[in-house]
Length: 463
Image (cartoon, rainbow, N blue to C red; front, side):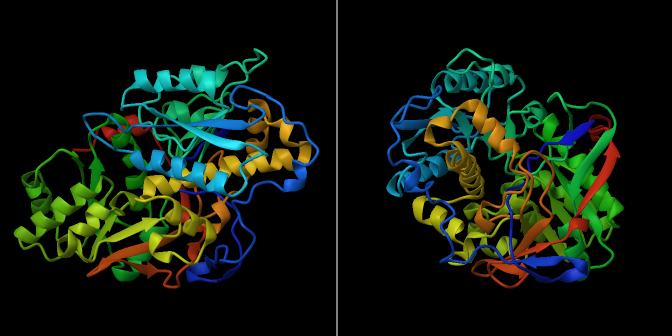
């Protein structure tokens, strides 16, 4: 039997009120300001009359230590996931300013995995020795999770390390039974926590495609594949297949590099022109989309009705490109920063982090998931019941998480949320395209589909 581990583009929760929406979907309205504080520490009464104890590695009578591990210091991409670290450090301050966690002070340690499997493994070793859990991480190269899976607890039992990740790129991390992920992934996993190889059923999200088809029913165009890593190329294959199944005529799928110059996009623009493309989807980063748009403008390509991008374009750098990228659509599965004032969890993040970004938002959501598990343990068994084993059990018991309505609800152990919001770059920055009402997400179970293929084989056909 198999289960799905998620990587999602952000989220996992248990949303709220819904009204009728497009095509049988629902428009979900997340938690409003003034509702019970979703980040409130477990009730003070749980601490009264209790002599706090050290209960496991990373849990003393006074503190709970967690580790955030992210690729931040590699010379290949300096500061790549600094947002994850900034978010957890901001969360530490926010929690301690509001009563702490499990009657203790929260301590956050940071580890730079440096875009290498060696430093990622060293980070697991450090967390095993010092922290009760990994929280909010984003390390792209994490193929060996044996330490995380078998790390001994304070009593020497090979309990392993709870890993509440913001994003997990490596399938071995995704499939680990100790991993709980905010973003969604397509990959199925065996029950023993190992990946499935060969042809398999994978999940993909197409709610954004259904929206683009309301603009242009007969979408014909290109798919820009993140081409710098074999894993990212493979991850694009099932997205391409799902778009084709949804009626999109993908006339070309091209690898693009994050290091490429604008001239590298000349043949893509020529292909778009020769096929009379009205659609270009960018699965790579914000720089790739900016350069593609600029090269298209330089060559006078004007047939494209829908320029679309993943969450990777929801960045300050992309906004700074201004008129060069105006009109580009970006889809995400959580409330955008522009919705400040509509959701308490979002507001807390924005108030606590000097430079918010999408990776940091996901890390904050992971921290909220960790906090929810801790609070549940305190409520049922008291503040001296916090251990790695109890955390893993509590996390396994959470099957719908929405970060206080900030993200679309999903199971942290697998799958995608079926909720989304689509933003469009306007003259003065990102604007809501769909649904239009701030503080809402469009949710539709039909937005998550299944495709069957072998990503490694399918990747060979991508140019």
